[in-house]
Length: 216
Image (cartoon, rainbow, N blue to C red; front, side, top):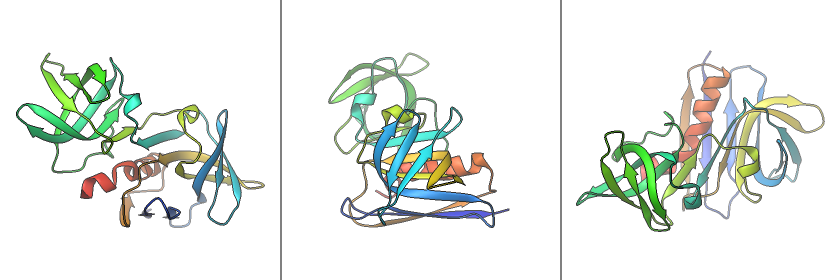
């Protein structure tokens, strides 16, 4: 079975929209602004004013992205993608944690390693071979945390959730993506899903995090 996740991301002044076409499965979506985090549950305020309670479990994929430079700490495992100049990499995208296949835009130099000497301006990336590479960051650097916990999510962030609908405005989430750094202007992203399994939904929703970085 083939489905399609079509995402429209807009500037900060416009509500994001996520529509999921899954070819007859019972998957549903909720999108809008994160209003509250109550333990493992999230409350999403939709554009129509509805409050949807999204429940998560240990198996729910939760990602967050934005100018999250404070999440880059000494000892963290990172994948850096950016532009190389005179031995220094200017980071465009940094994935914190295990490499995530959905975040793989072309045109950037990829580097993987461990963070050392982290500061507000950048850090030193230490590769598995011991090579030390200076990495610079800025407010425009997109940081992606694809293995986040609900407690890390911040109220007021645009958020998307896909899962199984429950009673009384509830959604049992398979995947949740919080995107706090939206691009200026308008962006349309089409992501094909090879089937309607939870793993395919996770890959498709995870791709939202880095969608605008791939077209910079």
